[in-house]
Length: 445
Figure (cartoon, rainbow, N blue to C red):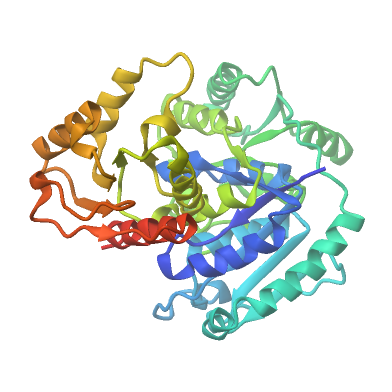
């Protein structure tokens, strides 16, 4: 059974190799579930992060070094660490959730691991520069040991999400009833069928039973009278939407929520208007729906982790390769998929039932980069000539054109006489690597 994995990592180009070392270790046993919504649109709802970490079987993190000045305004140690605040906060969430976890951290960050007696919790310090030189030796050794223990001892997480929610509201506020009514409506509208209000008269046992049953808590945290109940939910890792009232917004965060530079303060709702509060709660409740997709093999994971290395692109391949040389294109496209590069070629991308002319026109219009592989007779092909003319008509929009000779051809196309043509070797594996290497050079300029 694949292990559902939450992988926290940096998107900085200099960190990609370390991310790939970690992925090499876990790819054979773990499905990498990726939060494409959060990664691509900047969604930073903490209740969503809590839910995605909660339902994952394990948490894996690469905590990279980020040089920054010390923050003398905060006494908490996390503000002094030399790493990305968001990555550190995700790690802290996983620690609070008591997830089986493997944390690879650059020792320059100043990070200090939490003590644990479990062999399902491993912190691996590395000298990142040395680790890159040695091909990830320490990462592979430590990660393999951790993964072996996980496979033997892991208790898989219940992935189902409760459609019950709870409200923790300060009953002494004059608009308490309106707040409860508006928040209940917002939660109902996002699919929560049963909403329980935690009342002052509930016993500790009753509160615990309520919290154990719910998948989401909406909590007012600006009042000390509710602090002990909120602390229960915090310790139980209940995904929570947190808010304070306008008059409380100048006060300090509760002790449990303080101390995280990339943390709770960035997603704390301030209630100035109950209807506006309900609207924001609705957005966060809607975000609890899991739109992630699994990356189930090594090549797809590599492509995902590399995808921010390149500028925005859509690569168009134009060629007149005979059928017996189709395996050259197959080799090229296998490498492109592994590298996370988006490309289009007639035979590779068309599927049964599509209107191929429409697909072709869209690909020609969207192309940012072009690869030509010209064998003898390219100019005699009506479709190749049409593609070449269409692409040259957009020459100002095309960022790179890479022309290659294939087979015995040695004369350039007259319409591309200002371009250098590179002859590809007959070994198709070697030729495919050359094409992809030249393309990567263009995409990373």
